[in-house]
Image 1 (cartoon, chains in turn red, purple):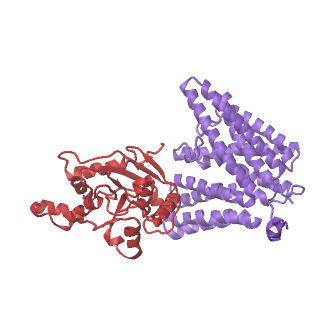
Image 2 (cartoon, chains in turn red, yellow):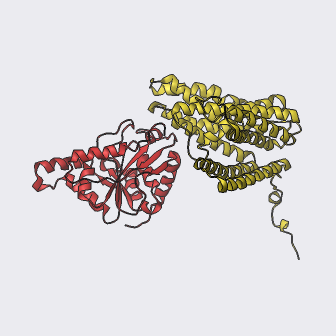
Image 3 (tube, chains in turn blue, cyan):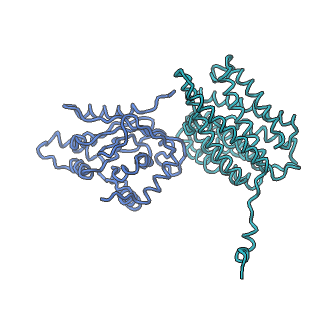
Length: 223
Length: 332
C-alpha cells in the first residue's frame, strides 16, 4: 500500500467540497495521524467523499471507506470504490449474522459475520483508518436509524483504535438518495469526542451510546 | 541589420490594447485605498489603547472587518479592471453563493430538489448571460415572469403538496433577491448614457461604494451615538442615530462624488439618498429573515462580517432601484 492518492480521488474530493460548501468543525478531537474509525450518519453518496476530503491530506492517504459489496461490486462503481478510493467492500448484514452466531455457537465462530470483522480489522492493518456508516444504508436525513452491530464487534476486535463520531448535516439536501444532480447548499461536518466500549458494556448499550454520540453533534437551532 | 519587434509579430496582436482604465475609476480606487490604510492604522492604535474586555472585543471585530474589506476591495477592483466579463463573473458568483446561504436556511423538501438544481445552475447563470449579450428585455422578465411560473410548476410536477405555497414562494423570493435584484448592479454596464460612454464601470463602483460606505457609516455612527432602537425585535443594532448619521454622511459622500457620475451635484445627492435608504431597508428585511430562521448571520465565509448575503443585503435592495432611476432619467 502506498501513500499515493489516486488523481481521480483528488478531483472528486475537490468537486464534492465545492458542491457541499462544507464547513468542518473538529469539536471533540483534532486531526491526528493515528488509527481511527470515523462513524457517521449516512444520507448521500457524497457523505464519504466529503468526510474524506475534510481530513488533512496526510491522513487521507491512510483512510479507507467501508462500502457495501452488493452495491459497489460491479463495473464503474467497482473501479471508483476499489481503485480510486481503496474502499473495503463488505457483505451487508454480515455482522448481524455474526452476533447471531456468537450467541448460538460461541465455540465455532467462523461464519461470514466474523469473517467480515476479521477482514476489516486486517484491512486497517497497522496504520489505516476507516470511515464507517453504521446505519448500513442511506437514510432520508430526518432520523438516524438504529446502528448495525458491526461497529461494536470491530471495536471489540480492535480496542487499540479510536472511535470518532461524526455528523454530516444537509448532505441529504445536496444529493439525496436517488438523485444524480446536486443542489449546492452549505453543509456542516462535525467531529465529536472519541468513544470506546466500556468494561462490561453490552452490545445494545454501546450501540445506543454510539448513536447518541452522533446525534449530539447535530447543530442546535439558534446557534 | 536591426529589426523591430513589431516586424515579427502579426499586426492583430500588436494592435490589441487593454482599454485604458478610466481616470475617475483609478481616482476612486485611490480614495478607497487611502480609506483602508487609515482604517487599518486607526484599528491598530485602538487595539493598543482598548482597556475593557468588551471594548477589546469590539475592536477585534472592527479589525477583522477591515482585513476583510481589504480583500473584498481588491477582488472588486480587479474584476472592474478586467471589464464587463470580470464584473459579470464576480456578481454571478456572489448571486450563487448568496442564494446558497439563503436556501440552506430555508426549509425545503425532497420534492424541491430538481427545482433547486434549476435555480442554481440554469436560471441564475442565464440571468447573467443575458446581461453579457445585452438582451435587456429578457433580462428584465426572466425571473419575475418565467421563473415565477416555472418554479411552482416544477414543484407540482414533483408531486409533494406539503407546504406547497410556502416552498414555491420561498424559492422565488430567494431567486428575486439573490439573483434578480443583485444582477441589476452589473446590468448598469449595459446602459447607454449620453456623454458617459465607456465609463459605466465607474457608475457601478459609485453604487457599490455609496452602498457599502452607508453600511459602514451607519455601523460607526450607531456604535458612537446609538441610543434609540428602530426595530428592536428585528435588529438590535439598528438605531435612529446610526441611521441618521449614516444616511447623512453617505449622501454627502455621494454628492461629493458627482464628478465621477453623469449626475449633477444635487442629483448625485438624491441618488445616494435613495441608495442609502434602500440599503438600510435591505439590511432590515434580511435581518427579519434571519431572526425568523433563528440565526445571527447567513454564513461565516467573510471574517467579521458573517456570510456573503450579510454583506450584500443592502446592495440587493439598492441595485434594482438605482438601476431604474438611472435608466429612466439618464439612459437613452
